[in-house]
Length: 208
Image 1 (cartoon, rainbow, N blue to C red):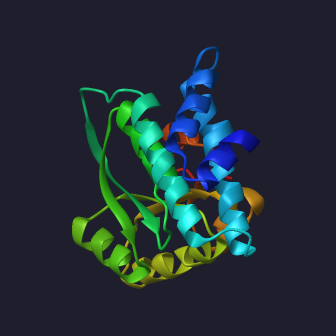
Image 2: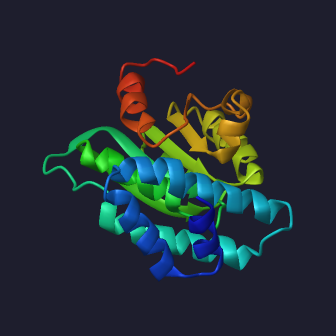
């Protein structure tokens, strides 16, 4: 993982691709994504918050990893489940990797999703309301972004909206109660949790 982190921080996509290729000789793509790629980006995100790395390094690391994902994530399913109506977003973060992974996993599982990309809290609440979203998945990398989930929950609740909100990302892994503090309905700790959580929430259950 150290070599992969060094490749990302040096903005060296060829070195990063070589490390991925070596892993795939004996390993599974999703394992690399969750155990190496995601954790490395979390370390870089923590380094930025501590003043160790530049924001440009966080951004470039995410872009390199997104390109790598195009090569290893599973093919999409041909059929689509249009209910529940699901949307996914990155909240105020300069990264899209976590969202990209979850999006691909759910699409591979046959779910139809609306991808809002990177949005501000006010815009996200408005779009969820306008699109009548039944389930909203929010991905964050930074703690500051995770805390803003509460603004989205409050805004939607004020309007009487019943959208179920699932959160994920490094801050929620570091603080296993944070998802409850921001008012989410469920939390996913890995990308592979996504299918299970969506299935549970379809039945009206909450994740504990």
